[in-house]
Length: 304
Image 1: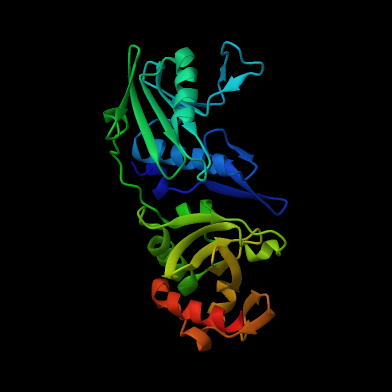
Image 2 (image 1 turned 90 degrees about the horizontal axis):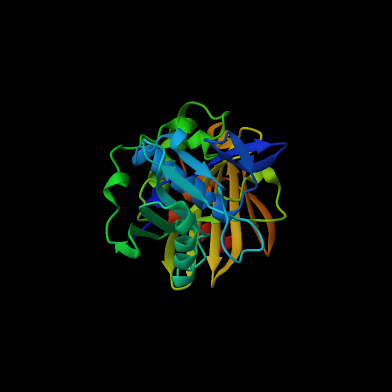
């Protein structure tokens, strides 16, 4: 089934300019790795929707398995109200195929843990199992103890904690960013990917989550709103052709709100260009960001 983690995003924290993942239960930061993002997204589902208390979740518990030369560790264990294991969850990166090997791994772990429920997730798909004696029974629906009973309110603080919106944004630009985040990232059935970019200024905040729009055969546009370490908020748009990123535009929402001339940069194989986004696309803080995707495509194609 589609993962419940699809509708959640991990928290981030900037440390010395570096964007790191923040575990809200351990109150620690970690390197921004794909499998860690999946684990924290899943934690958000378990705590914010399924109602599992923070105090009943553990991480990296050692498991002494026969034949293992090194200590194996579990990703997540959830406990019931009597602090007996209730769920063992194994998290993989989104590009890792969930197959029999992954299921066997978590089943081996559970021989030591003894949880009645097991979950294997790559953040895109979830596979739930119920354990009854020696039987491992696949579940077509989320088991009852984890059925969502809370509706998540994604407020401004939610988007700020997850590095979508910076602290410096104000007034109309802040309202635009908050509304745009809900529209771009609020539907778990829409394709969203975390894209990494190397070699560009951290101020651009390019490495983040993007809503992916299909334009035509082999052509996609990724749109993101992301905070940087300076407290600013960027609108970033990436053109992908044939599986390769060929151009992107980046702009400061603060500068757009101040109507600064040529506040938008476009980077492509043709070089770097400065443009006035409002003149080129009809962008405005009162417009639905989804309505500009075709205009973004036209603009990036023009400068690539």
